[in-house]
Every structure is written in structure tokens, then in C-alpha cells.
Length: 391
Image 1 (cartoon, one colour):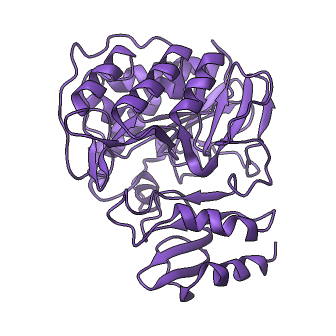
Image 2: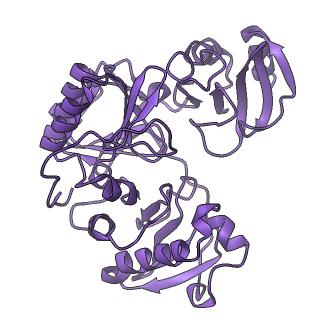
């Protein structure tokens, strides 16, 4: 998608041990090694990039990638010795930004149903380039943009601070949490989005607030509240064939490198914030156990974090808990299994199980940091609670 323009002349080793937003330039040290986050340009992997990234994961990391809520890919278990070689490989694939600052700024979430050359494609490419080149601004590391310019919004449930949506022939640029924004022409949307992000950054609020908090506190100027944000029904992704390829769930959000390579051999791969990928070249179902084809599959409706031993914050293992609870989950319900109160795998409230020091904790319909309703439970105890849920 788009050109990758100038890449870094040579990758370097700039790891850090702590931080909210690891990247490829600045990975995060986890309990199982370096965690490296890959941000494909506008969420798109070409066939060569998909197969090349799969090969890098198999050589230098755990051979399984995580699809994140921001439509990024994470590699885990990278050794100190293997990190420079991994970075060099990413550079050769066009998956490494010029430097760590550019990588940190370029947080662009793109609705995955674009057609080459349409408004979404064009605006996402222009915004990504503008962010990479905006060396005069220091945006908060977690500040993100959503290019959601299809016929109807599909990214409102995803995390973003500055949003771009279709408004008739124009595009509406608005701050997350605001009820109004500013309509601009399509060729002005990238500039307007960056202008709004600069305004937030220059206010100083980014040191301790997200954009939605800033809006609630009255920080958004009136001239950025001219055009109303239209109501839209909640959008749910539907697995299956679309106009641009197959939307496939990724079981537990874990994508084996071999599966990524198989998809790449068939065509481009688009990332989504829904624990799903969109395969451009797939023509029919393939026998890959990590892929989810049906909406009633509990693996599609369960979000689960890394847990132990990979994450030092987790109180215990989570993957086995999610698998054990899958048969108990009603066909309509969604579940979040988390190893701690951070809630890394899911944004917003849902039916939630947290691993505690004395067993499993049942939070009910809640966020991951909510006090437990019941604690010290077994997997069977939780299963019985799930079975009794009502729509």
C-alpha cells in the first residue's frame, strides 16, 4: 500500500526496558526476551513482506506473532544477540522507520476495506508520510489516528485520538470524545489531523491525559467543533469474503509465522484491530488451525493476553484458561481472559475473567481493573458462571 519512501540507511540497536509503546527501534524487555512491535505502512503487508516477516520470526523470535488492537504485529522472545539481525531484516523488507521518533509518531489505524487509490488509501498514505516527516513536533507516544473513511465508520470501537470519517463529499476530522469536528476536503485531511494532534500536544495535556480526557476537560477550541459527528450503529466485523478479500479471525490473536507465510504466498495481508487479518489473495478456505472462519467459534469471541511465562505482570497462565473455558462460552457472548488488571488484550468492558494469586477471579461485565465479584475460583466454577449468562 503506497510507497514506503525513504527507509533508514542502517538499522541500529536502541532497546529500552520500560515503556508503554514498544517498537522495532525501541523494543521492550519482557520476561521471555525482547518484545518487538512491527507497524506495517498503513497496516498492509505485501506478499514479499508477509513471507519475509514470517521467515524473520522463525529465525529470530518465537515463531508466532501477536495481532494487536492497533493493527500491529508483535514478535516475542527475541534474544539480545538476535535483535540487530532482526532489525536489519525489517529494514530490508521496508518495515523499519528512519528512526525511533518517526516510528513513535506513525500510529495510523486504517479501515481495512479500502480499494487501491480510493480516499482511504490516499489519506492513510498521506497521513503516514506527514507523521513520519513531522520532526518538529513531539507527539505523545500513544497518540493514535484512525482513517475510517469507508461508507460507514467501522473503527469507533478501536483506540484512536484523532479520527477521520466520511461526511458526504467531505471528510470530518475530529478529536476522540468530541461531538463535533471540522469538515475538510480529502486532500486537506492529513494536514488537518496533524494540526489537531499538534494542538493537543502543544497544550501540554498529553503528559497526563488522552485526547478524550482533554475534550471532557474543555480543552478543545470552538473552531474545532463546527460540524457534528453523525450517529452510527455499532459496527461488528463479519468473517468471510469481502469485496477486497477474506476477513479471517486469528485464534486468540496468535498468528503462527507459517500461517502468515501461507497467506503471503497468496497475496497481500491487511491487519485489523479485531484479532483478524484480511487476506487479499485467498480464494477459498485453507487448512490452517490458527484461522477462524465462523463467528460462533469461541476463539473469535475470546480475547486473551500473553500471561505467564511471557509477561512478568501476569499472575499466572492465561492461554490454557481461555482454551478450557471455550466450551462453556455461550454462542452470543464475548470473553476477556487477563493475567492482571492492565487488560492488554481488550479495550472496554465485556465478560471478564482475571487470573489471581489464589485462583481465577470473576469480574462479570467489567473492565480488567474492576474489583472481583468472586475470587479463588476454579475453571469449572467460571464455566458454570458462563453457562448461566443471559443475553
